[in-house]
Amino acid sequence: MAALIEREIKTAEVELIPSGGGVFEVTVDGERIHSKKKTGEFPEFDDVLDALRDR
Image 1: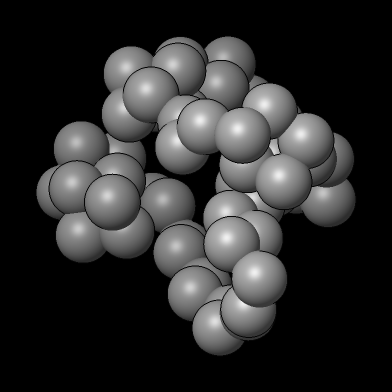
Image 2: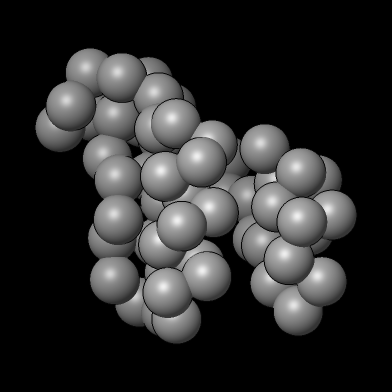
């Protein structure tokens, strides 16, 4: 997903932080926009792109 984000939004800076226990968090400008731990699901790529474009 990181490579796709960087390809779609040239100004995006993506940082991958390894974690365990099935955690997959997406944070934009310090605001969490998705938590797999909370929802039980991975985020939809289009939802992540929309959140980035809205910034």
